[in-house]
Amino acid sequence: MRVLGIEGTAWAASAALYDDAADDVFIESDPYQPDSGGIHPREAAEHMGEAIPQVVSTVLSRAAETATTDAGGDSDAVDHSGNPYGIDAVAFSRGPGLGPCLRTVGTAARAAAQRLGVPLVGVNHMVAHLEIGRHQSGFDSPVCLNASGANAHLLGFHNGRYRVLGETMDTGVGNALDKFTRHIGWNHPGGPKVEAAAKDGEFIDLPYVVKGMDFSFSGIMSAAKQAADDGEAVEDICFSLQEHVFGMLTEVAERALSLTGTDELVLGGGVGQNGRLQEMLEMMCEARGASFHAPDPRLLRDNAGMIAVLGAKQFAAGDTLPIDESTVDPNFRPDQVPVTWRADEPS
Ligand code: ATP
Image (tube, rainbow, N blue to C red):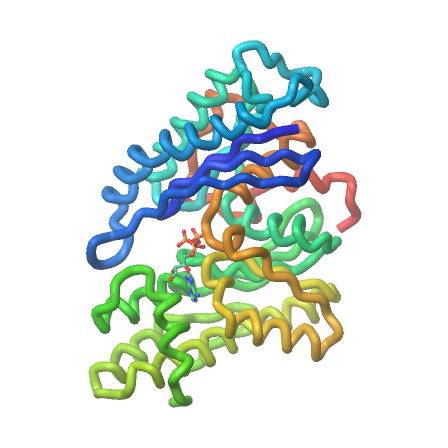
């Protein structure tokens, strides 16, 4: 089975081809880079409008080159006439994300599915961040820490859904780091720059807010901005931001493992590329005899590969979307998704 995935919830205009026989993901992405400030929704949507046709076209060329005569033959229901790419379904990120970006991607996905004469699959972007880690690791039923730009939450599978076990009470973790770096004049994205600067820093006290399974970043960001205004060394603030913010995420991840009785943790999201966060989670898992998996960086940050992989699982489960019901949802929560592709598993 071969699935074309299309992603464009915020900054990454991305398309991918997933071939389940080879378990191979080909990804083509074109990131939006703001000239100044953070992600501007209108500019990001304009970027999607320009970049999505190009990345899809590159992936279709790849699909045509690699299509075999029997490509897609495992899905008898699909008519491949007019589809020289051997593509069985088109999956797209339906939400959550920026409305103007999602609408552009939804339009592209509907057009591609109709042109190819194959079904459409609507994928929840946050569940895709989780499932790519489960897919790569081979873990059975892990807890997932999604540490991305606009989100931060822990998910666990129970009664046919991914339940939100804990989450940020205000901003996403990457957005929090980006707000601090904007304040000190660094351009977007700030997370990698915080990681680089933290290497030369020392510890200073900042607020640490965990309430049960939830956590908050607004206080620590205000304190970090104030510390910068007061002349504290930027390296020390970056080091301490990482120690506090990632310490909070690690504490809650451990609590989620304990609560669910699971001994598998996967990481998802762009902030998951951070070496210090991975180190903390690894140490915590090792200390409690749990297994930890962080996907490859290209599959951690926003990318269409994770959309194509989850799209293939949904398609195999018959979980397709009629075109006239395929509206996007900027607030699409992971616990709204019936987990059709694990329907036969105990929870
Ligand atoms: P979401 O998936 O919630 O929609 P998003 O669209 O912003 O989030 P992601 O690719 O998951 O996209 O994450 C982007 C975020 O990751 C940015 O905030 C960026 O600063 C942060 N980031 C990238 N690399 C690193 C790093 N090495 N350390 C910390 N943060 C990082």
